[in-house]
Image (tube, rainbow, N blue to C red; front, side, top):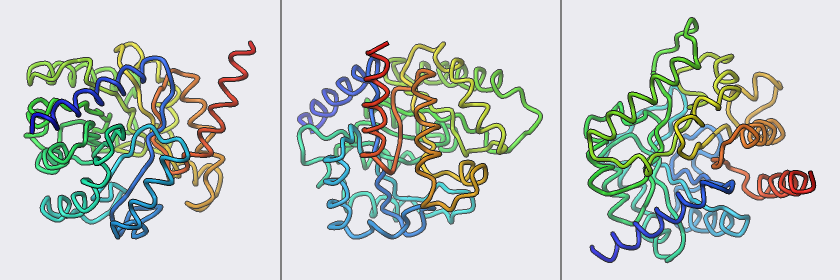
Length: 279
């Protein structure tokens, strides 16, 4: 157990340090039957590991494992079933001494099980507000945590920048009270969660609000419906829109992009870096 804790702390500190001055890619691995883009493709552990190896080869810095779909309208699954799905692949993923694994869950029990198996990041799309035990789970496992701006209910009248600032200020206060170090927190504007279609664009345009907190910012827009609506594209035909939104986010300060298409994003980021260096 001590060996796992030491390994996790090393990997956590490494990825958080890297996220301060370089752009990282978080590759998505959904071990679910109903995720909006790739549901059912990687339920089999062998298929899942083959996908991970492909993501690694394409340049993924982090593998984000999800055992329950977070798409709007998706059926909830029990914590027991989610843990079973996640643990079918987690030991193999964490067998590598250098692979950094994230668990995409809002349930404290799932987060704990994944951390015990070796995950170093807890990616909570409810910003540690859905499960009352999540903050304690993050603190006790000494994990890094992605806190997502997600109010649940859509409120078109909100001043989205002000509300996002207040949400994160409150999140930091509660995290500190729970014993979560500020330097372990990553912020996510929560595109697609509890927002109108326009508000998805608004939070991306106002990433400066997140920059003010001085911690890494993660943006996850890969293949999401707001892109499909704007461009009139089906889910498998949204790569160009995803790349555009991702690069715009990087230019506004984001340092982690959560994506399905790692190789294409790695190429786009290499071009952006070369142009910036030449300038």
